[in-house]
Length: 385
Image (cartoon, rainbow, N blue to C red):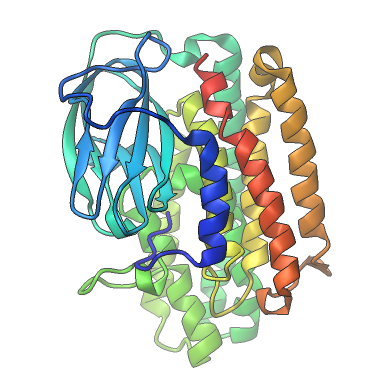
């Protein structure tokens, strides 16, 4: 979950603006409160008009099943939109909605009470509204192929999270031993497994920012913890002698989120949305160099996000091939192009540092991610078809 307090760089904004065009909608934000709308049940998108101070959701109640929210940012700050279940469990999210852009979120919601939230500036708890979901629906996983897609993806998450635990423990042990060289070597390796499964990790409230927040993500008065707090000490202070407690907390938080991730019930729509979210992560954090700003190991995260996105799409492949084979062909081509663009910057078993990349290198990578983002933005609609 990325929550920068400032607007993205011009490069990131351009990538997101282009990628978001596929999600643009002509939905009317003033279509009236109390309206119901659910994709696939005959209704249109629920319009959301977001500003820096308001979050006007055109419906206070929707039918159980899959709903589409068309979020228009009429403010001056980059915003994001969430649908929360009890305990701030994230049912769906769309991040990095730049001013003037409309982006859509497709989400599957069983009957119950939820909250919607706009987060201007992408910080804090957001501007919230109650959302009632009523009636009965046939879960998407009643479709055998979609059920297998979720099961296959959960096997992937389990394999990655098992290794995340091992590599995080190695990293934490190196930090506590004050072995700075070894900890630096392990930092991008451990994060690789984290970045591959981050869409699942983001479901669970405050655990994701506790593990992965950057310095400017942390609200005044809150404690900064996690990977990037230790990263700064490793590369800037060059002293981790006081980081034992931080290291132990990181291990505890990663262990907790792995347990939750492996137990989570996922909707096929979450796989589709997660694949897109990972590309947004690349655009706003990795290409810009904002993510690993002290170590400059952003390309390790870039590769992991790309791999995680492909894994989510591949889980859905049998369904996509049946419903939209042309989209599958395009996705295969664009994934291959993005992977080839990244491969040009391999260095040994890893990757070049972000500081070693030229503006032209970054432009090529940006174009490849933008080209891939457009067809991936169509996957959720195919899943709920």
